[in-house]
Length: 364
Image (cartoon, helix red, strand yellow):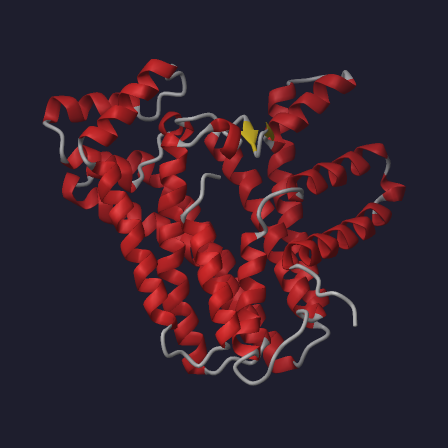
């Protein structure tokens, strides 16, 4: 009997196989097309494959409620790989929107494309080229994610394929809406009462991250296992609060994370003007003059290390960091309770709990 294939390895192998086919398909289009596909391949490289792993875990939780399950079958691995390719698309567009220079310790896609323009000695504005090319790169990755998903769904039953396809489509709509809400909040917060800022930040976290990072990947995997309504509901009740905890941990790392671990400069979310729950809670505790100073600093792309440190101290001293840490713990407990008594495989539930810890207690 062959050894079981680890989910991260299986997902990465499936992505690599798909990209190899894409390289062959553009061979006649010339060197520029080959560079473009290579940029897409770079965007998909690395990461924790968290969304794909949740997809496989959703499948396993339902499958093992009936009988022990071996390695995830082709349709599940293809769906997990499609989620990772879609995630890469979202990151390319997100970095472009946020003017981020780095991703996972490497130049972000638009910066790499910009550098490629300069290195080739091409005419025109390299920065504009990088931004335009990155928009198209993200679009290509979205198309690839659909192609990969459909390749997998062709190998499963029509009813399960339809259920998984519907969930994938819903995820795409939700994260696009969440991305817009995130962009809008950087401007709209000023017209909203201060006591609504945290609520609005949590709304962004739900649509932009919680549903797309955890809840819907679980649902897609469960659909491919033929989940019934009760099983789907239990996984949703687990997935959404866990996704919220995951995003709140991301918010903390975006302000306090170590660049060597996160691959992005410390305080990057402050320079980008992210109106997270951390900022909302800090503002609630400040007098109006101090609140105005925070508003002037958050979103300044030229914040120096001392200014970042000052904002970090403010977030800590106001108790905002402690409040967010308690909220993360509350969401994690809510997620854990949702698994108690659910008709899901016991071993798979243990794996889900391990994934939950990995998603909420992390430094990257």
